[in-house]
Amino acid sequence: MHLRSLRLAIASASVTWTALLPWAAHATAASGPGSIARTLAWAVYAAGSVVCHQRPDRSFHLSGLALPVCARCTGIYAGAAAVFLLHRVIPRRDGRMTPLQWFLAAAAPTMATLVWEWTTGHVVSNGIRAAAGLPLGMVGAALVLHAFDADVVKSMEGA
Image 1 (cartoon, rainbow, N blue to C red):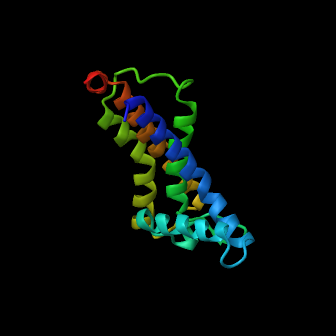
Image 2: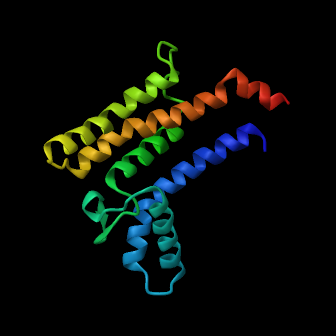
């Protein structure tokens, strides 16, 4: 597969997955038993269970149902999808920070919420969880895009 096609496939999968999260809750609530929509929606829930704890109290709800992933995961996926959709207008990385430094900086809000919850016993809201996950998804997607722009990848493309 050509690398440009792979990049497009990854971006499309990210955006599609993010769009499927609210759709699955709505389709499950609105569709009758045995319908194709409900079957597909439950497939999204099953996929979500592989990557997320799916605790209803830590998830956003739509149509009376928890989304297929928790609020933090929703934020991560939304951040990644936003970068993939807007990558042409986002300024390029300036090189002052390494990819690891970017990742650690992006993970800091999520880590702060975890440390807060573990040390105080107070649970932060789902909105805060999602907001803390946004930078992690954004930087993760930006690093994927950066990898496609790297000289190493460009040299592989010519092979």
